[in-house]
Image 1 (tube, rainbow, N blue to C red):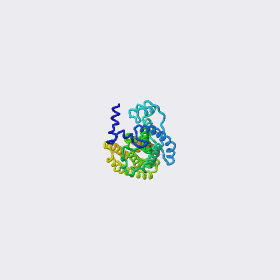
Image 2 (image 1 turned 180 degrees about the vertical axis):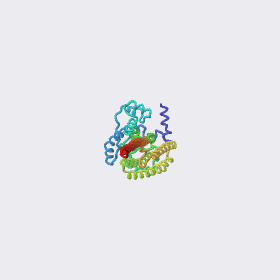
Image 3 (image 1 turned 90 degrees about the vertical axis):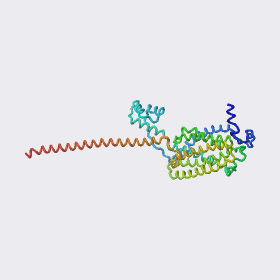
Image 4 (image 1 turned 135 degrees about the vertical axis):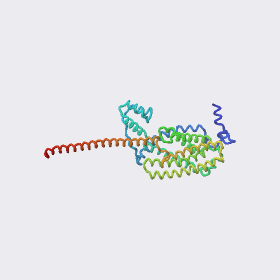
Length: 385
């Protein structure tokens, strides 16, 4: 264990050539980054979760009603203990053989069992109000984080000249504002990772988990290595477009299409300028002059990895929202097609029955006419004779 610790904290891995850990301890200033500071992110994450819970119920949900967010009316299912047990323990989409087995266990037809599972799945799908509340929470955090980060950085030298990020590196004391900026961002992403199982599950669910892990690693690694100056700039660049995306989602759920489209256009422009121009050609370009090349390649790899994940999210966008498609959209379409097909088949059956009855009625009418004509002829025959 001791050998592993010595290897992990080897100064050649963390510090530029000629700098030792003893030199870092002699750093001027009231605060210097320490790995144990990262433990503060965990209680902050729990605090964010509780704050989010209160915000969504006290602020976001009433706001959704003011903006006109409407939830789809969904049919409730009849109580069926056997079907509910199978739904919760085995599968939400039973096969035909499993449906046949369930039919034998309860007093329902094959069609009624299929309808029960369809309505039960619809009840578990997230409502527009839930998605609006999630987007509202992220919008508020990203907006506050961007505003606070901009206020704390706009008067610094490295905000206007990124080469100042590396002047005197790594013996750079950490200002309290930038320390809390780091800890709050780290705690927020931990809270997103802890809540990912209860949030709306989207198509990019796996990519989101990988993205959160990579972001937490980059924040922790850059803090321990005292890459805080350039790290705060990178966080500011990312926050500058995220709150625009979340606001576009909010108006999409509220049905404000024109406002949503306008916000999405602004988001796309800000996203491309900040992520491609400033981040790639300004911030990362300054790394090559003042950076330990080993860490330059490592952080560059992780930042490019996050860019790939971000662009994968961008590909999932449909007009205004990042991958805002539930995990079972195809199922819903298939179910609608099945319902339409069943409706058509029922109408075909009714048409066949109606045609047969009309045929029987017409044939009976013809027979009655023939019978009446024969009776009239028989009555007229004696008179003619």
